[in-house]
Image (cartoon, rainbow, N blue to C red; front, top):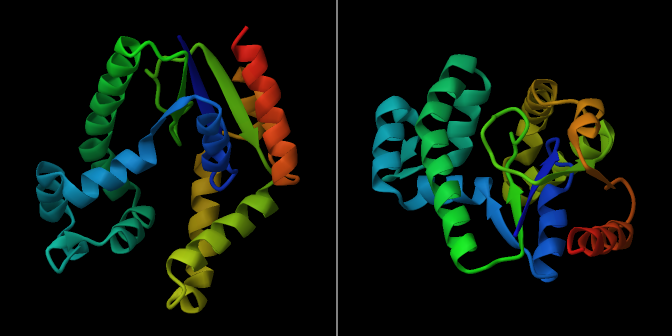
Length: 206
């Protein structure tokens, strides 16, 4: 069994690359998806966030858009949220690894946004998904527009500021390349990305 960590900046295309790996037999631990599940249905998480961020609790559920606004404008509140979520995500990660080992999985992918920034995730190899800042910003805005079309125009300026904050906080592409065993260039067509992944899978399965 090989454990492969995916690293890449905001809107670099990690999810797209992860999906290609899944189509070719890999299993994925997606940290963002696990966070969404916790916010949607985990009673203890919802209670902790309701107590710490009451303004994000609307109509008996966590409003992720409001929560995101709160934490990205305040580093102390972001740290507070991370203290609630990270231990739970790490526990889910460990359970995922244990189950994958029992099932005899050959290729495991970790799609964890802060893979390099947050230490302690087990990886045999690291793949860096690389894009340019301008492409990342364009994808970030397009993604948000698709999710929240009714408020996108009035929020656009704040979204750009949010992108800049996140971008500056993350590891640079130069540093990602230093620690990565493989690099995927995700600045061109989808077909180009797919061909790179297929070649990587052949190498990883040797």
